[in-house]
Image 1 (spheres, rainbow, N blue to C red):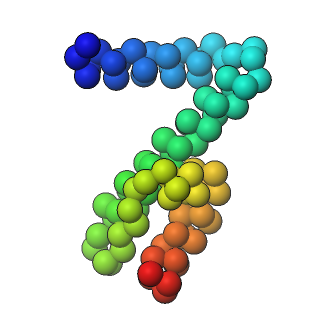
Image 2 (cartoon, rainbow, N blue to C red; image 1 turned 60 degrees about the horizontal axis):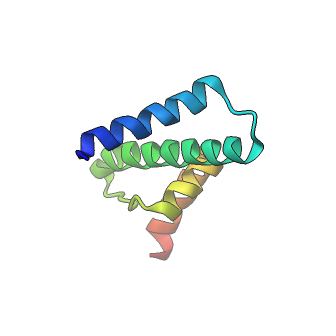
Length: 87
């Protein structure tokens, strides 16, 4: 299958899960986790775009996306502090 078809099918499944909801709790928890990972990756993407002017770069991977997605803006600030002072 073409990659665009696979991405479209996955996007449709995610949209249906978000729109219709799920009566099964495990599927609902997994879909909420995936949404938080995507939101965390978007936070990091915009941080890297804006932070590029100030020399801030936090890599986008599963762990950093999970931290920024679950903890939100404070998690994003924590990742920046770790990047600046520890690493």
